[in-house]
Image (cartoon, rainbow, N blue to C red; front, side, top):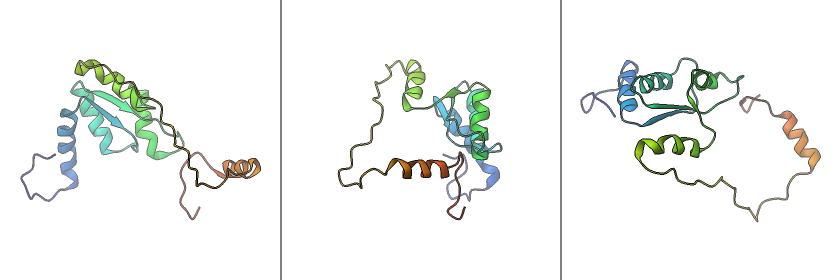
Length: 137
């Protein structure tokens, strides 16, 4: 989506203008991951100003990439933990009934290795932290 002519080379300063178009074209806007200074937050602000629904997926308070979405939640954005949170909120705007969405269940993998021993599992969980890390870490 753009209001720039065909063939225009995109520039960083053009994205907020594009975000305005995106915000105006939707019933609701979902922010999944956004740092404190993020173009997604510009879109969310514009969507809210246009009367659109603003949703946010929470993240770890220790992860800077979640600060924007968590901030939106503190400001009143609708919490999203599953797709039905969105469909239930948007359904009244469309005049349609929200679909019943069954919870996702991973199909069994009959070719997979047997589950790890409990002691191995505990060591892995202990090694995991609350935020993503690089392979080198």
